[in-house]
Image (cartoon, rainbow over all chains, first blue to last red; front, side, top):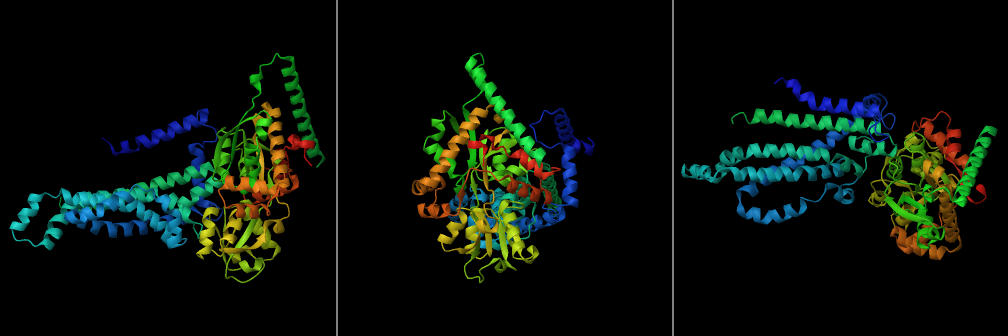
Length: 251
Length: 331
């Protein structure tokens, strides 16, 4: 099958959407694809509020998401290894994780401002919360998926605990952990709108832009922003996927 | 100006004619009563001190006295959300700010008319404790939060800066939603904010800051919340709208004549401490009249900011305001 088939579903949706808008079948005030493309152009050249252009919004959001994601990965990967390895750790940590995991990041918003002020750290904190749990849980299940016989074999061959962790557990857990990173990045990126509700001093951010388009009733620009958020989320996922292929070549 | 007056008169005449027709039809008994409805789907902002008249009319039974079946279709957190419910034709009548109403109407995102005022003024600039200065120039070099780009509060801040000859570029103006403002101020994340009541009074009472300027000083009697009606609902049910406005006027009178009882209701409506509610009420002018010139001024500002794209903001605003439902046809 040609790789062009990948474009089939998005193109079909756009064509259908355009047809429905021009026949007036969609609810009134729903912008058409052509309006959205014009909106992308307006965001790039003029910006919203005027002067605040798309690249500025994009880079501000990338900074917040990458920081939140990096901290989540730095904490969740080692913790996941530890919890997956030690039954006792799991018993201790599990109730807390299971109780915090279902809380929507948005609920933490006022506390995020209280603890981290307005700006990079409070929004990154909410994104951290979005990224953290998928990475942690996937890493734990990755460690657990390493077969006991493999560990036993290593031990009989005289491997020490430390080298069992580094040589057996870690490589064995990697595929699942990387999947966790991908899911974590996806959810972190989804948390963007909530994260940028904490207040943005610079006036930049793709999520913050969602709020501005809402206030100004510019649903064409809202959809243009949604398209950008979707595309960038897709690209971020691709980046991790490519990195995964490079890192896990040995498989 | 004369054509404008003519237009308003023509419209009033049209509504009067419609009223006569509706009355005639119902007296004649040949029209089905289903054509005009007494059921009204109403929207308002949650916890908004400005919109107390709605709650008073509801709790004191004024809508029922008028034979109306008022159904609360939504309590919204922000004006733009309420206006998008008008876009989706989910609301007949709404209590909402002038800014979101004009922003949506001026882009044909919602077809609405303003039929009564709700309140004037009732916003304030609050500055953090420990910062010097008793006038607007104290804001120089500071972080100041507004509820949104091109909101009435944003406009008021710019007027205040202009009057004090302070360049807006000398301060950092950022957007923050009012519920977050008080906390951001007390933790020194921002130096000042401008917001509607009860947030200024709440912040001051809790010791988070002091009022630098009331909005009544910045722009005396500036417009704030309005009662807006879906245009086609107004055309089909002028008598129902008239009754609604009458109940609203009665409620507004009640607030002015019985501030203590109104404060009890305000505390229930907003969930605020009664004393905060009572104090906040004193900064708000509950007024059902509409100042067309002031609404035109704000529409011109929205056009200047590129928010609405009407060719003539003055005639757009004149068309938006429909005072014919008020007792005596407005003042």
